[in-house]
Image 1 (cartoon, rainbow, N blue to C red):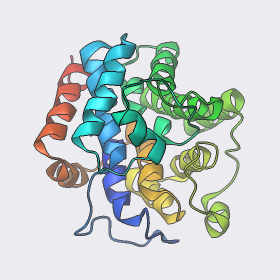
Image 2 (cartoon, one colour):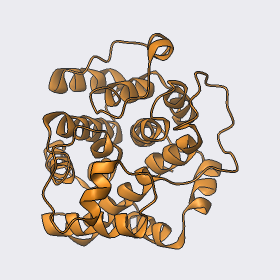
Image 3 (cartoon, rainbow, N blue to C red):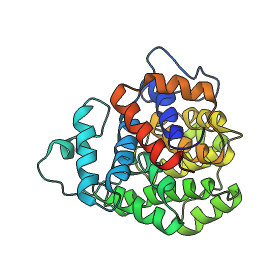
Length: 264
């Protein structure tokens, strides 16, 4: 299975390692405490917006706030959770990786790279209007779109480096020993993309991302969103993660699948 399922599965697999980091690829994918977090909730909020009216900023904001209110304890950053409950809907200049973790549905809806970028920018700018917040969303969306449309890893790498000036020449084994928890786009998105570029398949990509010992669920969601445009997510992994979603989130996922993924 391909699609936004990759971000969801990455989030759930990484959920037990966000605050209990590891520096190895040798770990059980699922534990008793595995759960969806804000990465999944906000990915599906974006999916809901795209199903309702992808041209409407108001619908986007309402969707983010609606799902945020439904799941207030999903693990949002402090400024974002304030935004969810605030009567104002003004962006707050965030440079954090929330813009990148939720962006993947934009790449699956778009009919061109330019459209993907326009949707990605709108999806981010309502909260993450800092240049680095926008860059993280755009780079992630570009990578998903290019992977989805059959570009090679080398072409994806070159495009991201040329367009966003991310250094993707590093190796996971070089990054891992010195890497620390980092929620900024600048300090987590390039590393997540590298985890995909070095991955041998979807699961190997997820293991790469979690083994960095950083913001595990979000980096696995970002890397997984790209990997699931390049490879299939194994069926057993999809089934396990779908069983963890509640009825509301599963319905949002299926609506997106039926509208955009299952069309002839």
